[in-house]
Image 1: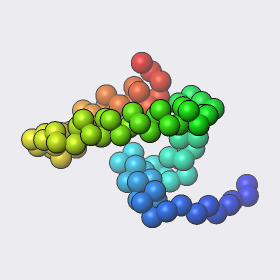
Image 2: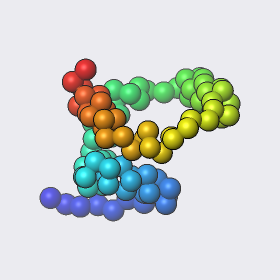
Image 3: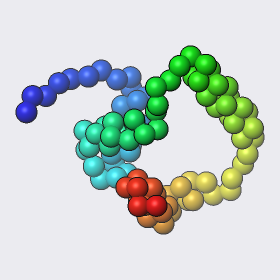
Length: 93
């Protein structure tokens, strides 16, 4: 099988690397999974849809920017979260 090289920014690479580490997987496997679900979550976008989505992200960011969650790091590293997300990741729900 031929292999190709792609360029990504350092922040994107770091996010992919972190995800791969969390899932005990390779970068290639993470990208393959993303590409398999991309058509399901990223329909053909037009400019109006993109503008609307960006506006929604800005509203949500503003809404939740001052929220303080005690023990957030402990909550995010809870192993039960991975089990709950397993069903979502593999479409079992």
